[in-house]
Structures are given as C-alpha cells and as structure tokens.
Image (cartoon, rainbow, N blue to C red; front, side, top):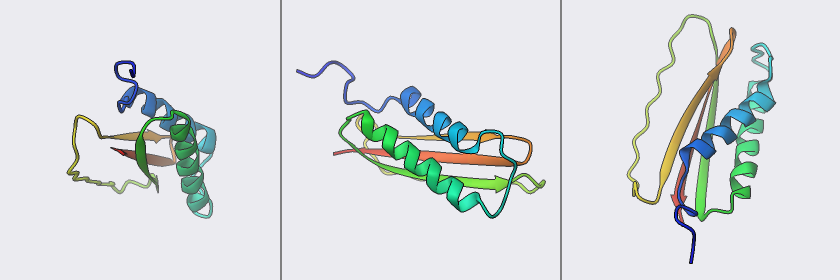
Length: 110
C-alpha cells in the first residue's frame, strides 16, 4: 500500500523546485528583453524535468512570466475548477532590482 501522502501535491516541495529553477536560470542577471523568451522556456523546462522526477501521478502545467521593473504594476489572476483533495496549484514570485519572475505550477492527478 502507498505511504500516506506519497501521491499528494506537496506545495513546499514544488515551491523549492520552482525557486531552484528560477535561481539557476536567472542567477544575478539583469533584465534583457532579448533573453526573456529563452529564460521563460528554460524555467518551464527545468520545472517540468524536476517535477517528473518526483514520480507522482500528476499532469503538470507550468507558466512563467518575466516583467521588467519600470514602475508599472503587474496584475495576474487565476480561476480553477479542481478537486482540492487531489489537485493543486502554486505560484512563486522571485525578483531582483530590474525584473520580476512569476512562475505558476498547476497539477492535476491522473
């Protein structure tokens, strides 16, 4: 029989994966509009690779937004119709003095 919680969405575990992917990709980089697409793709790929290594019965959707800090606000919203006992979502914001990165993970049990 499965251990208790073995197949649950553990937000702390996922948060660590996302933070590590962002740190690994962005490091101490300064905002560069020409690199944003590549950075987002790399963050998403890294998250998906590490999430797959957890071997949990989930399908994952990962999104990442990088925005230059220029005084303009960024607003984001999300609405989900999920089973809160089996599915989960998590959003992480990491920033430096020139940009903010918001990465979101959605997990649906299969």
